[in-house]
Image (tube, rainbow, N blue to C red):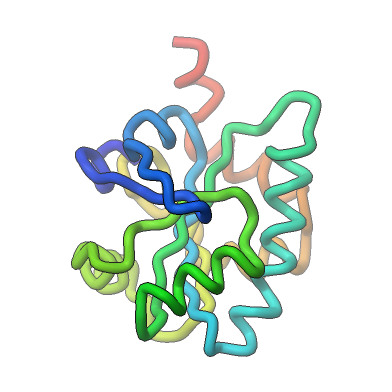
Length: 156
C-alpha cells in the first residue's frame, strides 16, 4: 500500500491526520468506495463495520487489516457525517484530495458501494470484497492475507 498511498495523509473519523505508510504497512488493505446518500452503501457500511470490529478492534490479536474509505460524497461535511455516524475506526482519504478520483479510475469503480482488496503494492486481490464478506464473513480474510503474502512480510 506504500506504493499507491505513499506520501499521503489519511484521516480518522475524528479528523486526525495519519501518515498512510505508517498506518498501512504490512496490512491487507480494503479500499472502500461509498457515499452517504447511497442506500446500499449505508447498508453495507454496517456489515463492514462489524467485520472490521471483529477482525481488528475487538480481537485479542488484531488482524493485519485496514479499511481506507474513498468517498463519493458531494461534500466534505457529508463525508464526515457519514464517517461519524456509521463507520468503524478505519481511515479515509481526505475529501479534498484529488487522488480519490484517480483511485476510482485505477480500480474501475463504476458503481458504489465497492470494496477492493489490495496488496501492499496496490495490486488487486479481489474487487468483490463486498460480495465475499456478505457470503463468507470473516473466513474471507484468511484468503486475502495469503494472497497478499502479508504473513511473509511480517516475518521478514
